[in-house]
Image 1: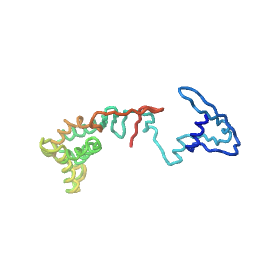
Image 2 (image 1 turned 30 degrees about the vertical axis):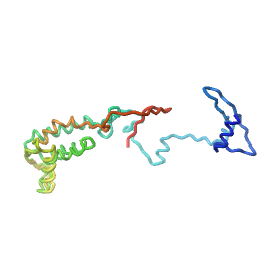
Image 3 (image 1 turned 135 degrees about the horizontal axis):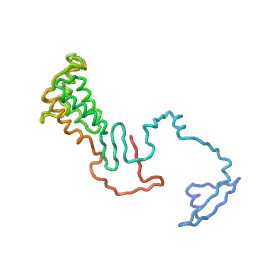
Image 4 (image 1 turned 180 degrees about the vertical axis):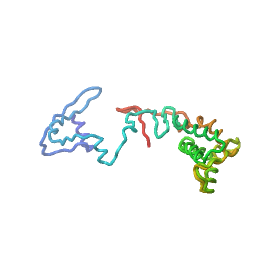
Amino acid sequence: VRSEVARLLASGAIERCPFPRVVSPLSVAQGKKLRLIHDLSALNVYLNKTKFRVEDLSSSAGVHTADEKCHWAPSQQGTWLGYEIDLREGTVRVSEDRISKALERLVLLREEDSPSVRDRNRAVGSLMSASLVLGDSATLLSRSLLQCIAESQQQHLHPNTRLPLSQHEKGDSATLLSRSLLQCIAESQQQHLHPNTRLPLSQHEKGEIEQWLRELRDRATRKFVESPWQIDKRVETDASAIGLGVV
């Protein structure tokens, strides 16, 4: 006990008091190793005990949460803003709901000989909303559709104006997936066309649509861990061996 007290004094963990007002018991407990136990229960009567809820502190700090959108229990799998995150596999995937909606809008384009600029905008918007996973391909593979939209805006066409799909929009294997669709959208905007203006699909637009219909599901998953997990250290905590955080 003497050596342990001397070590604590030397480290500054405790201080010597010349005129103590409270003398607390000091004892030694023996388990796997000796433990120095200082009974400070006599000080409890002087403590300011305050009860509070974490939720109240958050509100006071201006932090407000929507419980129906929050997952407070740690999990390795979950859906966030339309993306399915799997920390076990190290993947992030576009949710099935988003995929189905995008495919539905692409099928609508394919079946219409002269879909409107608004129809093109909706299809491209569904692809752009998944850009976290699809990356630059959401734009690069929709350029024909965007070009058509841009041209219709330049011509001030009504958004419901029907335009035939170009060869690139339909699906030319030499073109990137949505170049023609993006071009059509951009051109309609430059021409100030109404969103309902109907424009025939070009061959490029048709090509993009067909390629997206074939490849969207395969492109909808992205690994954020390029190589298998290489674990060289394992950290154990008193709460949980697994933690999940979202930034």
